Image 1 (cartoon, rainbow, N blue to C red):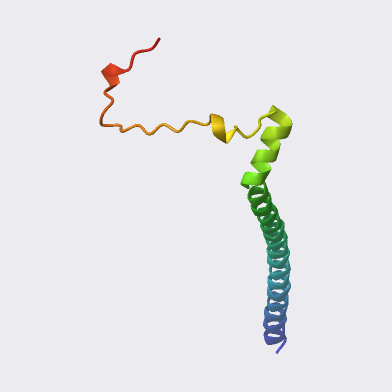
Image 2: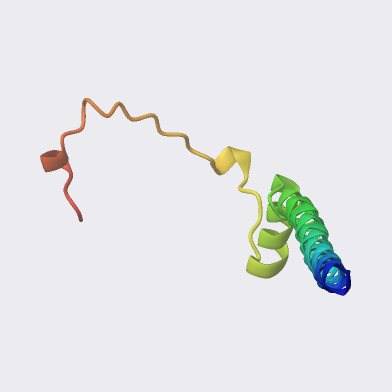
Length: 99
């Protein structure tokens, strides 16, 4: 009878250690999951901020303001504007002469 009790005790200790090990692994994986989800949230927030920034920077009004303020550029006078329409089939590369 004591031999059976000893075998059952060893089996019980083995099962208990197995439960403890599996619980530890589950907690460890849960912590890794939380860390990955936090990183995902941060990257998602950064992506949204970059999208807003790209929409703001890429607008024509913003580019025009920057050109006027930083480069001193102005809109050309419509009376002095000349529009040239060139048909690419008429001009041959050999016919272009640099002055």
